[in-house]
Length: 267
Image (cartoon, rainbow, N blue to C red; front, side):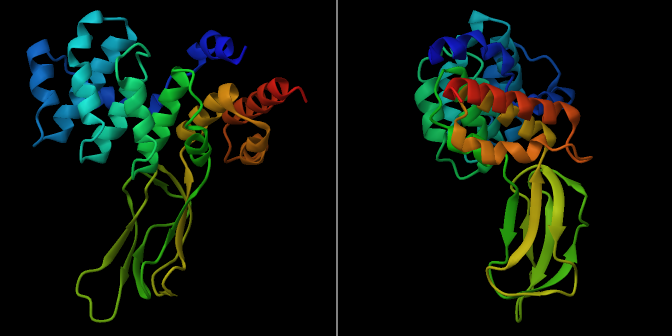
């Protein structure tokens, strides 16, 4: 059955491994008392992230003592800081027995951040829940940024440049405005295109397109290996192409994902 498939292949999903590079920042061991303090340090979101990363690591190693902080994980699903919610969504996927985690993740599918929505959807796959499939598919799509008003481009990054989530893509000015409008990337990835300085843009016109980061695409493809449907192949196939900008492991995963989907569909 599909449920058995979820659990027998669940080990394939290691949610958003690019989050683990945060261990180079948040690797300092925290005592239990420090974890409690950090999880409630609303003035320093990085302290909360530090604690979340370490709780998640202990969860992944089956440390039952971390259950004392599970109510905090549910509380932080509504934290005002996007990076905290993003990390929290990943952490809750480390223990599918956590009381309240499933419901909290379902609510996070409606988060204002595409990265939080994506992380919540990927974590739900660990619960055998494919409700977040549309959000997983969205992780494969480029981010398209438009001008909020008629504006003039005064500064911009270069196409082909890697950019982190929240990175500055362009600055726009409008007549009579003293402060420029900043256009920032909602996802990590690489700039496919961006309007260059001197360009005049109409409201609603395209400012930039950002292709999703390799790690993000790979995780989405691995999740779709388990929950993808025939209709998803249109989004998957572009990553099967033998092109320099598609790493071999991503291309191979895309091919395996299509094969798994076709097998489930009996086609």
